[in-house]
Image 1 (cartoon, rainbow, N blue to C red):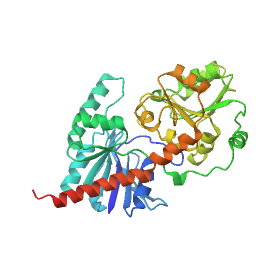
Image 2: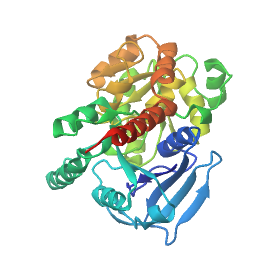
Image 3: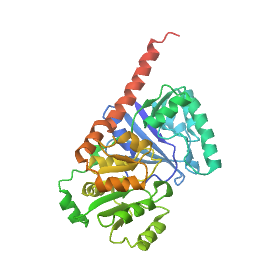
Image 4: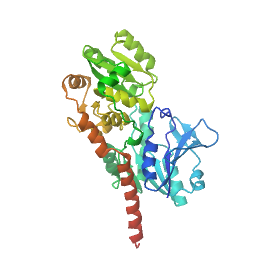
Length: 372
């Protein structure tokens, strides 16, 4: 079987080496099941298709595309040229998703959708209205085919919209690429220049408004006598963030790092006590998975992703606001073992791949038995 994973999103999805590609993690799980996998990414910066072979056997193709903001458009004929049997379409509310689905139907290519979000969280009325219109159009196609939701929240939205056959297939962690860290927390802190006598908080994410990074400084300002913050990320708010650190005189309390290669970020997770997530609209949260796998206790604002990943009070903590987060950091127990166990048992790509393939096989068997 030849399977193509298509990322229609045509924007900045993180630099190679600094971000674990979700597509690659799932592709590796498919490959272990004997499936040939192509990962198709869209770019308006290339004129011809760029091919790269991953050590796992997955073929990564960066194909020329046009775009409207982060919505990509490409020539679907590449699917027939590659003799693709099945398309894994990361559709969400992407404008071009129906065209890809129609193309697959006409060419006899099996196509299923993988959905992490349906509706725009933009505060701009026009943009939110336009995206809702595109979502409604996409849902019409979801009703007719196979669709997997990344979280129970999206699954519920799909069911409510009429896509009653939708199933949950969560994002997973590629544990093979995570380094084994032998050093103790004490040794790691000494190596990384992190205080030994304070609770250490870590924030890993884009310096963008939706990630709510400035609130991390309000939190650490109130806790600075007892806590130290490691902040990893860059984005449009970088200048504002650093100015705020200076204004609040937090230079000795906040360790700011613009970027850390993914293989090295795990040492920071393991050296920390609490991972904080301040995005109240978090779709999923790969960094949450990674932190929990290293035994770092997560305290997150309630949102679709954290609500699904974390068992509140068991494998992490869910809060409504900064005040509640501050209280948890002050008083809550560390949940190292419970955090790691939660990820190992529920959020690995192998489990997601089995869910998807078993559903596709069931559909084929059902079609064979159908006499009408």
